[in-house]
Image 1 (spheres, one colour):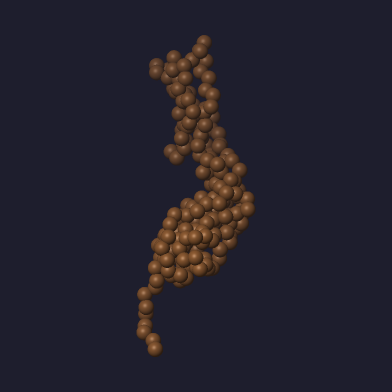
Image 2 (spheres, one colour):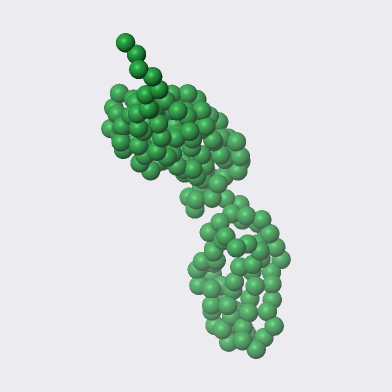
Amino acid sequence: TSITASITGTTSATLGGTTTVNTSNGVATFSGLNIDTGGDDYSLTFSASGLNSVTSSTFDIVPDNASNLSFDLQPSNGIAGTMSPTTTVIAVTDSQGNTVADAFIDITLSITPDTGDSSAELKGVTTLKSSAGIATFDSTWIEKAASGYTLTASSSWVTDEISSSFNITASTASKLGF
């Protein structure tokens, strides 16, 4: 008889490994099953054709230790000197990409070397402590117009991450002067 395991309790997680096995002397042994996303109240349902399904008790998957940074909100194109284009959200993640909610680490955001205008600087608040694994940089800006900027999120505790490319254009003149 073939028995199939499936995950219940969340729509965002995936059950990996060999999810269908044959019984041996009436016993189905599943080895190597894994769930790719941390979370609460998961359960596994085991089913076979012609038999009643059985569901496990609920359990939690705790993320690994923090190991990476990830851009949850990438910087976007903008105008030189304005804050909105570089608003960025950085998540502290484990090796599976799960946000590590108990991570409270300093994260620094900077212009990646050799991108955009090499003399440009990221202005404003460029270092924040993550809260529940998230750091929102909403008070930063770049004063020099150029194409192909990227930002680097870094911390001494985890692997750095580089953003997608974006452009900063010159602001529109508002008056003429002598």
